Length: 189
Image (cartoon, rainbow, N blue to C red; front, side, top):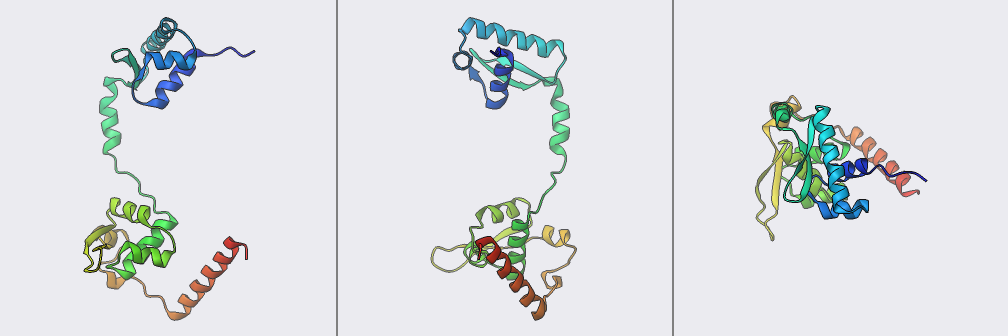
């Protein structure tokens, strides 16, 4: 029968939970009494200190939490200050193109074109500062209107929306045909 590596189990619990975990909860999870559990946590704390690791286990009123050591703070600040790489998925690009060509546009209009909910995509594009709220439509419920930002123009190398490429009717028909074929494949028709 396999022996249980209690230290590894405790380490996994503290790492996964993120917040502090009561000694009693840890002890119940590993099925040991509080004293044995506290002793194991103490050994883990010593190991992290002796091995000069970037993390530590701290005690907070009979609870324990895994966290970063104070001396690592400046490195965390450096990484946090680095710009985050934005990934524009197919869904985001599709939603962005609808907004760019149809602005000002409401979420309902975007969803009508896409055929699916677009809340997440629109929210991500707002977060990336590629899309912004332009105001509200003067209609029942006063839905929010969305349009592109200056960051959008910079990112796509155009000075204005008028510079976006215009598709000729033949391309539009080809894209419609491809979309219909994809839909049929997905539906198993």
